Length: 274
Length: 236
Ligand SMILES: Nc1ncnc2c1ncn2[C@@H]1O[C@H](COP(=O)(O)OP(=O)(O)OP(=O)(O)O)[C@@H](O)[C@H]1O
Ligand SMILES: [Mg+2]
Image 1 (tube, each protein chain N blue to C red):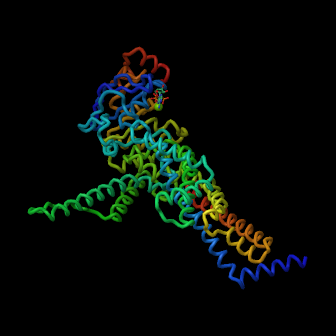
Image 2: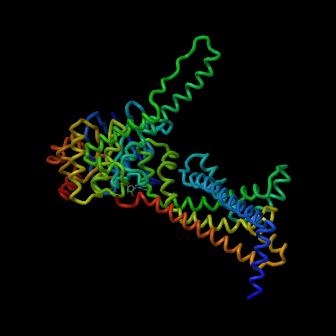
Image 3: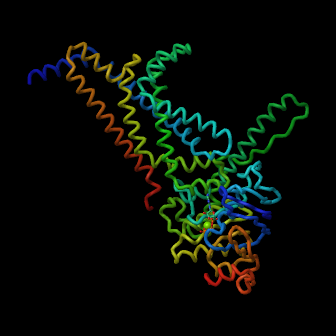
């Protein structure tokens, strides 16, 4: 599904990613670990071009999204992202946070169809064989109520349906992060990227977020997760990669990765964190 | 003190019997019109400029626009508003062959002028919003401008509301220069009453009081708006 080929990123003359090659298949759960400053976040942020790669390719569903000519916004809609600091929209209620992007996308599709129909209508005046118009589909009110319904289902799933109309500032860290996860789910993404989703949480809230992620894993969601939670990696991942100085030094299934590490730097790293 | 009460009587006579209040109402409505429209135009221009100035600059168009915006801001912040008003009314409009009343010219100039100030305020406001907000918007597939206008700018506006309020108060007071281009504002109205009754003390006191009351009302309105915006800060 995602094929990363020779990905490079440098900030000025600082090489942060130095030729990353990795393949992520549908249903994969890939955990990325590595020392601080090794380029894990940069790697993740390059995958959806939050940072523009300075070299290499990212083939996502057959399209090289590292190419600056592609409309990245279209592809990002199929890639959810969950941040360390949640980044819920502070000026929107919980349900609005979840609905915003789906409603926006549906509305802009609708607007585009209408524009096209207008020009087809104009052109049809001069055509013998009338061209068919695009279906407009739902009204804006229908789009909204459908998105709200779906958002409420997602909130029920995480047990926060009573928080639908409050602002994010009133939630606990764990609740915020779970809302951020369902906000990503609301777009029906093909893959979700997680950048240290539990690092900013109080210890007692880490569990609820990891549990939700485990559920998603069971349902077959494709996930790429940067984390320091080694226990979680061992239990949930089907592939663990070790990044150091902008390169993938080791990539293996979790059992082999943790029990039989090969690269000396990984051995050293594991001896420190385990 | 009989002097003062005679003056007050004279003022009331001028104000009511000789229809001084018509002039005052005209002045008041002009003052408010210029300040309110000027501020609204200023906010729109300021928001656009501030957005241009925070756009990533690795393409050509944003760079050119940015250059233009810096020039605009420097121009309007670098000259007194009276000078801008006089230039617009007596030099640029006649040369361009346009026809505008003093009030219209004042609305335009105060709009352009407060746009330059508001852009700097707004830029500070945008920079005060956590970068993660824009990132989250981009990450769900919203464009830069949609993320800005739906997520970042509403939060920026909330942060700068007090500053923007001060800008509005300053604007109300600054409108007193529009008499330079023949528009009737509060000053012109009370001056008219004063010169017709040969008595300036009471008219000017009343004028000052009206300004004070306006500023107090605006301050109150800003407080109410701040409270409304603070909704998203409060727990439950
Ligand atoms: N916008 C930027 N400009 C310049 N340098 C950057 C930028 N972003 C990251 N870097 C540098 O790139 C390197 C890798 O950063 P990155 O955030 O990817 O590391 P990380 O592996 O996620 O670390 P951590 O575990 O601390 O989150 C760091 O040395 C950092 O200073
Ligand atoms: Mg990081």
